[in-house]
Length: 71
Image (tube, rainbow, N blue to C red; front, side, top):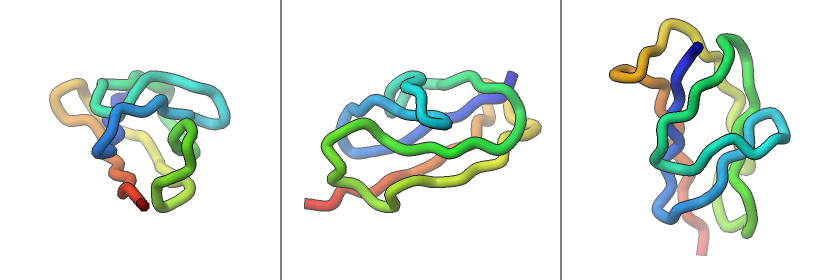
């Protein structure tokens, strides 16, 4: 399994490949490979989504993805 952390200034559900899978600031375990990451509503964040390639991560060294708040 690979490891991901999604950063956002507010707690938000994280969508991976169209399915909810964890929350921001929590370690998310996923299969290795390419995934599309976005956040749950409301759509007050940028970018709208991030395409990532997960490989060679660990719980102590996860891939980190950041979304910015748009107000």
